[in-house]
Image: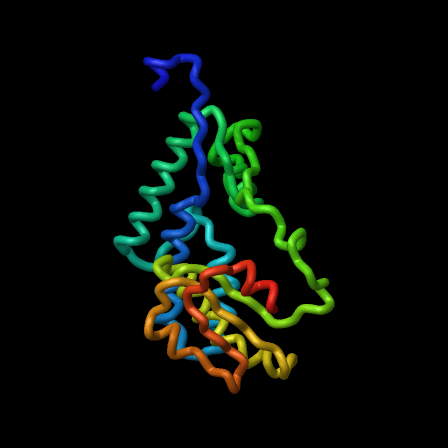
Length: 204
């Protein structure tokens, strides 16, 4: 592109730092295999996964997914350095990309969160008039499966503090495992695919 269009602006839309996603997925697998206590597992997932850094994490063993995360990081950094501007969708990823050791010019990193106006603009009821919790995400995306697993583990603890609370889980292609988590007595509702998510949210 540079040879054919020397004046063209090269913009890289990151959307996600994929090495971060791949590494976190491997870390979740390791924690699930290592921990037997439900409460301890939830704490480990929050503490270790959210603090994971693909450039500094030391894996316990040479695993294919760990190597894939490392190789993906190198490719992503190469793409970033070849680009004129980089669109980054979250503040946490922005902070990670600004670490000095990666030598990325701060001026080329542009904050570009998902382009979606706030639902608050369309709400017919106020925050104080609404209730319940909602989780949204298609289940062909592994992190969404992991997030609902974690919610199911910690939900009894939330319910003990908020006895009338309800959690509504929306997302296409729920697995049998996710579907089996539906428990009306516990206030944990797995709805699966929904045609109009805005309408569903307006009811909560």
